[in-house]
Amino acid sequence: MDQTLQDLSDDFTELSLLARSARRHVYEYLQTLELKRTAYSEETYRYLHERGVALEREYETLEGQIVLELNVQKQWNLEDVARLIEAKKTKTELLRVLQSSIGSVLAAGNWQSPSFAHTISSQAGNREGEVQANIDDYTRDRYPDEERYAQLFVQEYVDHGIRLPPRALLTSSCMAALTTVLTHARTHMQEGDVVFAGSTIYFQNKWVIEEIFPGKVIYVDEFDTDGILTLAQQHQPLVVLLDSLSGTDALALPNLQKLIHGLARVLPRRSLLVLDVTATATLYQPLVDLPINPFGMQIAMIASLSKYYQCGFDRVTAGIIWAPVGSCGDLLEARMHLGTIISDASLYTLPIPDRAIFDVRLRRIERNARRLAEHLDAYAKEVDGPVLQMVYPSLPSYRGYAWTQNAQFQGGVCTFVFNPRTANAASQEKFARRVFATAKKQGVELVGGAGFGFNTTRLYYMSAALTGPMRKPFVRIAAGTETIAEVDALIGVFKSAMI
Image (cartoon, rainbow, N blue to C red):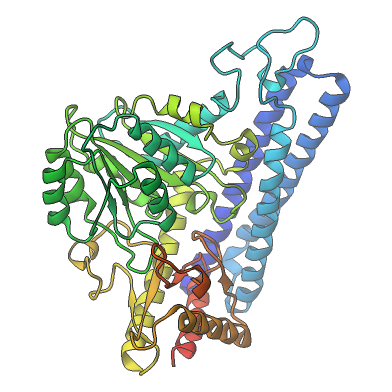
């Protein structure tokens, strides 16, 4: 009970901080709106002001309700748990809806092609007097709020040691980030160049890299660190594309500390290591492991901002690229030509970066994933059912356990290993449906869906119609931020379905 109540206290604290941050964001918008008042007709100004004030008050009211609950937390007891869990769900849902409104309110007066000069009426909105001709007068290329958010992201979320802060660029999705980086790299390709890709990377990432580098892709085993380094020295790949933690059945978590050092030693400056760090977020920091060597390989990180970074809101698609100063210097130009920048309304919908909130949330998700994996793995070995074991980096049976047992972050998802005699997409789907039926019967909340980083645990499976050469069927649990009591209830559901 003590741990469950502490979990709820942390949850309400997170909600209060998210509401306060969003309210502050709207307040700053209203301050700017007042300064730029002459850029609008009086009627338009009043409308924008009223919408902003109303939204600020809604955030203020919600924050007050959450803080009021926190003020009496010393009086919480076992009888309050069900009520508090429901209140957490309700407040989170309302905060998520308000987060949708913030993007439309803050972007309402904007122009996608703001004027840098005018004779009578401005067409620059809140950027009146600040637009620079041929520099930031076309939002599809760049705009100041995107650059400010990118700087804040680096400040809050990227550890870089004694290096200068890296340059960051926001994109409309992680796929857009990948396309931007690989297309940029393609412009430097020479005759005979090859590229490496991890064998378990996201299937759409495989499609993209094979389309951009047709006939040039060599897949490598992420668990074979020495083998990758030997091949890299032999082939000198132009690009190496890896996930910091894959989302497929193997959940490959490469020994990146050794890989990054080794690749930096054997690859020349023209080579580029691209790391998709979506699944490890702030709890693995690649630049800390990168040797300070101005003549070695370049490195670029990409991440989806639609997963962990939205704190479960899942409101917009968004992605980001960041790279050390001097590495991939023309990525900005590549993003401009490809038109892969994030829209302003989507940008404003993203929560303001805050490491203090974020890392606590990640640790909760990791704890829940590990608890699910370890309990279900032990149970699978006790019973004669369809599941043989679980895959998760904390388990001794995990292929890379030698380096993952002490990893900084072991991930927020786990997967099932089914009996090979009956393992196919149809039987896996049948198992997943049995899980949902059991959860519904026991009154335990569970969601079926893709993605991860949500408040509610999700179960994902791939139907037989979607399998193919790049898509191996699997069943994955993406842990949520539930209290420990709720996680134990989920464990009971899965155990019942595993018999």
